[in-house]
Length: 344
Length: 266
Image (cartoon, each protein chain N blue to C red):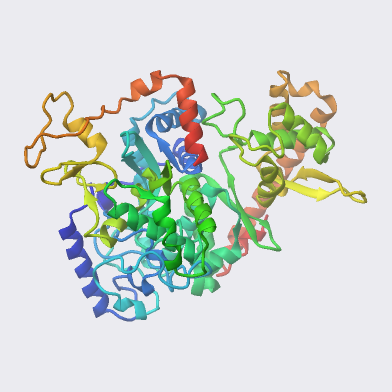
């Protein structure tokens, strides 16, 4: 049950007072919440978490202003106390008035938490994550500390959710999540539904693999049609299958969709994307295909052999990576900046 | 939640998998949540006894606390179905909407939200919302565009549409209740029984107090002569049935398929 209005009002007044007393950046400020030009950051939340012992929580400097909004959008003033803090664009660090966890007392920690929220949102929506967006929406002025903030946020997410954040495109700085729990199927529906939500992808990966690791677009659609999925027909589960296959899954790096070299008129083909290689394996996809045909992977001898070789290579890569990680961790503990994301 | 006095729970892969899947779905009904929980146990810890859902969730929440996130339980306003969502607690944390929508889109949402809160029924008609497009901040938006933006809101589970009218999705209420209560303290309606934010509900025609439909159902359960808890006048509205998860499930696989379909679609 939400707290009554009175106690919230009192809490707000206390915060307001604390804020007026400590205008400068410092380690022991009551952090500004509704300040920061009452940005779109105030959009959805008007009050602090009920479980916080004392004053406020996090603030996003200059509000999440970035592209979507340069001014207050939905929240005028989310609290009745006025926005004097608005003019003070500096961030306040978390107050030591929060006696809870020690790690929260350093100035980056609220950025870490904000980044966690941002990343989880992207995870939920299966949207690509770019370094640019992270800086624009969360990191802002602290972009010199980007690596550290990202590392800490990733660690929290890894611990709580069991997902790893990795840089999948070091040139354009795209990141993606990889479940450590081996989550390739939409597990809650695979028992009851005929096609798991990610089934579309798995089918595509299967066709591509069985076809020698690249499949003409027509071949993929042919199989999809058998399952009742048509490129240009709205599907009750997948919506717009053509868009899912040629745009969404490509953007998420699960598939690659490219023109067949030297094809005239241009024809297109699908290949596995880097994320498919990272998140699943030829063997797993082969198992999926075998199951769909009510048989076993070894029923496809050449594919099976290729899958076995792939498994071997992965095992070797894992061993090498582990050794490398250990070495990097040692090196990192001695330096301030970390390029861990590149140490793949 | 008790706050910092609560001892930190222990996360295992069972909990992590649960969180991942819950997040993927955004918001889930209680029955799905229980099934999800059982599934996670099956995958990671076959022999363990499945924790009571409430304890399981409290455990997770104690770990998420330091990240200002929690799994929150709410109840749909129209038929009392319990729902769960992962919700941000931090006041000014990254707004889930601000990074997805442009300034004028967010303003459209605000206009719709205001109309919904001010309305008697908890619904704002598409026409009334669209008539406000000229007042939106940011880039000029045509009515056609606005219609599509409203559909975007429906797909992202911020709004529900019923016959051309819009109200807040249960998930939006879970996430935004505090914000709404603080931003619109005068316009906001509160349920007389549970004291939570009320968007849709029934009201007493004499004294004006309001109650959620599921709260009405529970309060007047097996009461032949329902009377207003405040002024004791005869309660004039039809009393809905208390939500019964068992009956829901008996209605058959086809119904649950349809429901899970619906929730996936919007």
